[in-house]
Amino acid sequence: MSPFGKSPVIDETVFVAPSASVLGDVKIGKNSPLWYGCVLRGDVNYIQVGVETNIQDNTLVHVAKTNVSGNVAPTIIGDKVTVGHNVVLHACTLEDQAFVGMGATILDGAVVEKGAMVAAGALITQNTRVPSGQVGSPAKFLQHLTEEEQSFIAISAKSYAGLAEIHSKENCKTFEEIEVDKLTRKNWAQQSDDYDSHLGIRREKSLKFAFPDKMASKGPY
Image (cartoon, rainbow, N blue to C red):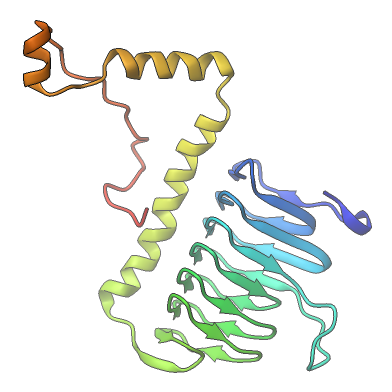
């Protein structure tokens, strides 16, 4: 949608879930999926999303024309950022490789620095800065990130890029292709060995529905 004559610019590699809404002055970079139920509303200011960033289900991203501090602010999300389910981002900045946990709210003028993490359920108030390499909740320093936590941020972004490819292909299927898939799964459905023996049925191994090679073996799904 294009309110005020402003239209989204979305890279052709981006998976936008059917139930997501993208409105107005929104720019989304390469391989940055928008998951089910997301709303990115760039009506009174702009929203910018970098590359290989994932914005997960039911997240709301909006901007500010006016606020208590009188600052007009966009929402800027960098590269390789993970935004968890049910997050609210309002006129804030997430620098590259930031991580926002599920259900967090980040308000006007706040900045989550590169490699910083906002804990699930946190409230980051106006003009608060979460320093690089730290965990913030709610809007205060908790602890320094461990090496494992810092590595997880990068893995999360990469894993969601691969998962988006699977969902994109699934959403592009025709009705006929979906029906064939359903029939195939039904034909190869597994029952217990005891159940099959009573019916005199011998089943071969079930089909394996493979993930793309670039999908990580483990991911935060």
